[in-house]
Image (cartoon, rainbow, N blue to C red; front, side):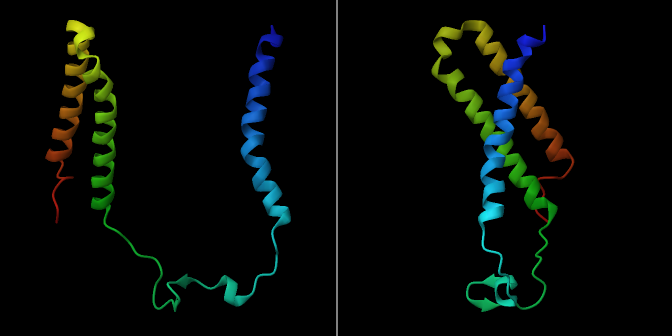
Length: 118
């Protein structure tokens, strides 16, 4: 019974070791001579002045998240639009349910005030 899972275990080990091997190799091969100049923050050739952390409003992240969600909606609807004639009523109903769920999410976001630019 365990022999059936051997392929999955080998695949898992390969999937974990493949990206980790270059990182470990680079860690041991990199030059290790830090100096204060190398450790300083570099910004367009000028010395950094003031606090280097810039805080953004959460509103920007909400807009970005809404953009990503509706961008993915387009990615899912494009194949549906291409095969619209072959899908029939079932395809139309599935797309309609998908759009209704996304519209409900948009209305929820709108009512919570996430789309208000203040």
